[in-house]
Length: 185
Image (cartoon, rainbow, N blue to C red):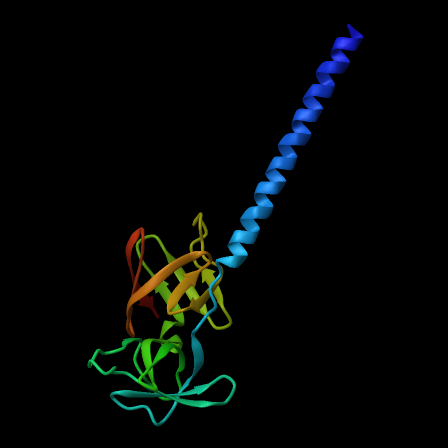
């Protein structure tokens, strides 16, 4: 009887060890895939310069360079500008080169994005430095951080397109739908 109990325990322990080894191997392969699939952030950050006009954006980057972005490409396609172009405001710009000219495809006015936003179920504040403060105590999935990444707004791990950003409204969209927020004073 003692011998059969020992065999059963040994079989159970070896099964658990094999199961753990398989999970560790799976986790390692997932981490390698995740690291390889990470794309670089192509967003350029800076301040909107005094030389900004209707069809051009002058950006003084965080490293002190002055860059000129066309807001119309060769096909007269208007860049996606959210939050307006006000000299002195902080900007996040995604652009490319077309025929040797730097062209903006997405411009987000970060200064306009900062502030308190409310909807039926959310009440949060986007603060400088990448933090989000939730003003709803009972909220289950409150956002705590934000950043702009390749022209998208990341709130924690949720990725949104900014469809519209104005002085008093914010329209965000992802696979779950369109979310509308009103600025709270």
